Image (cartoon, rainbow, N blue to C red):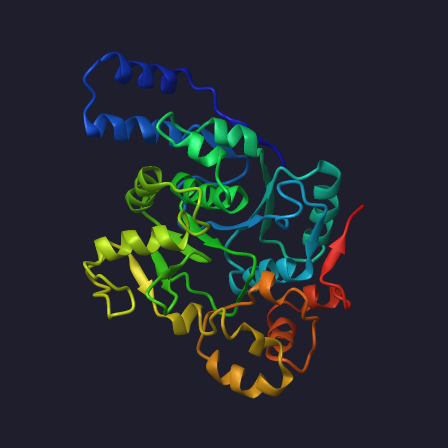
Length: 335
């Protein structure tokens, strides 16, 4: 259940070799070579090309890099909220290069939430990166100033290309099921698209994003492969120079752009209100019609749980088991 494999497929290798040895390679043939490479990895247990897939990528802190020894109760809360909101769907939690012993301990905590619709799997980050096509900008990636963030951005897109479905960041509390919407991204409200939640039913749409990422990869800008990429591509596809200015959501080449009120009701400048008791009534009014709420874990990590705040009330309602795991500490340690 916890292993990942790189597929050694002689037919795929032969197809790539044939394309290269032809000499003159058309743009469509280059695209087909990328498609072959995009299919050269898989996660055991995940059903391919199923738009009902829901994915979390369990990452550590920047300090932990790809070998974290701890998980926050808020990460567990985010996963539990999705398990409750989508009881009919399988929620995949992907570990990135976790130490096996630590992963086993964390797995016990996640399975201990007592939900049946959860599947844990592991990705070997080194095998994954080595499986990418030759035209991927490996040099720029290796010299990236934000390699931790950029690695997650890359995995997210390639994962959704390979399998389809919904990616949810583990800083989100899922309040409502939005499975009736397909191929969606979310408007942040500041002329940009957020990268915290996205759904892709069609491979062609993800391929557009991947091709743009490869072409415009920049390791010096933290969000270049995240919200900047999504916003740039959506501006082109929706024929709008500013995402905020009423994109024609019926003319975005198959993409749906959800309003910020649905999935980003409070922005990063107002995150503190979620944890301020004096703002509880105001915040609950603002988010009452939202489907998802962002907790901004890196910004709010020093703010402890409080049942009188809006964040505390959200956790008690949408991830009650996780909330009980937490004391006054943000981290659940495994040593």
